[in-house]
Image (tube, rainbow, N blue to C red; front, side, top):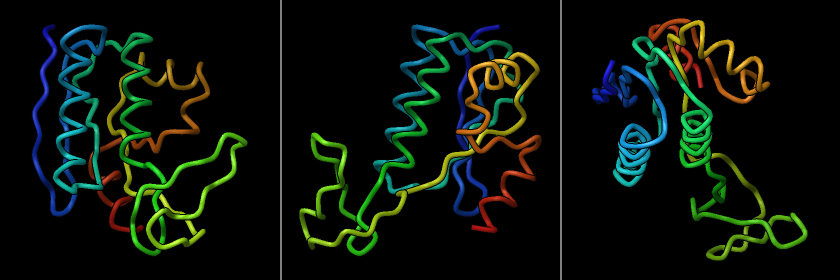
Length: 146
């Protein structure tokens, strides 16, 4: 099955419907660009609907991890500026307001993973890193409760 990607909205959540194989090549480029475009628009609640995904390879898994990092990047809790760690792994003060409190910018969830995706996430222990839901409805409820 050819890779397909479409987006839609449910209130404040952008739902990215994925179908086919998430493997190296055009699929990853499309997914990466979609996530970056949504973040650039200020959309900070993103749901990746994996209902019609038949296979994810290691490159696809890496892209899902990149998407998670992009959406949940750490920002200053006071002014919202992007903050970074120094060479020793300690948080630098906010470059804009000198605040030291941090929070994630947004949320990314996965819904409807098939057996292969579940097995991959469990084998790599990433099931504990991603916020995974059995259904789209369950994930949307999860967004509302936060």
